[in-house]
Image (cartoon, rainbow, N blue to C red; front, side):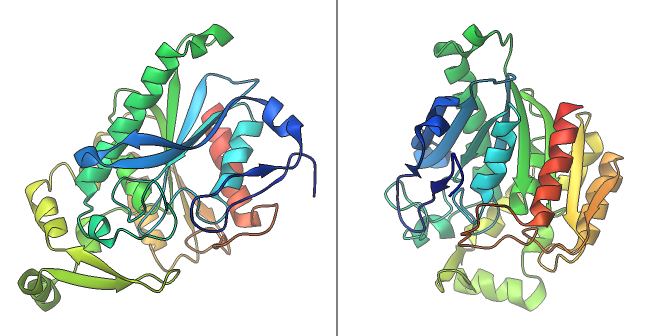
Length: 308
């Protein structure tokens, strides 16, 4: 195993086993499974790493639908940015179905059923506030950093959340990785919608855990009540922050046409990743020490954008 590599927990709450102490010494802060309080006062977890040669910028990573911070090789993507002097934080949205005791296997299906896009916006706000508070109270600026800059990255549904938060006063840049361009299109239509309304719950199979994940109709009611705030096109057209839109050409979960929409609305060029599906050819669990080539390309493009 190469110097500085580690074993990653494959299920339930685990502890990273570092093979070499040098990996720890490279970091000013290296924390896993720290608690934060998100929407509706629900506690969830986040990881934070700040390198010795920190440049004062933190990448805030938002996972997607039925996702979690420990999925696949997101940790390797985080390592990539840390090696290039960025801080990196990834968190579980508060109602993703995980708990603080078991953040991976989705034991709390009731919380999952009550998740909404509005709650994920609150979670994002909570994480930004937490980072800014820690920056001030823990005197991270003693390292010569005058002000904290937060760069947001969202994958899939998380890309939609990041786009909706593009006007956040404390976000300097943002990137969408295979991000959705419409929340309305995520919901059933016609008879399927009415059936959901009448039965209150609909179910979607989780391919990883094989659970039938419940979706309460309140998810759609929240969208109806907050449709303007949840209009991704509206916020993209208003966007005045530097942004990057990346999408896999072979994505069948979120079609590349949605990436084209985002690029058009933000007046940017779409970065097309050839031979790449929705997760840029990563999968869960991920046992390799290296990211797939497609995700490496995404990380390189994102790093160049953040450094520009």
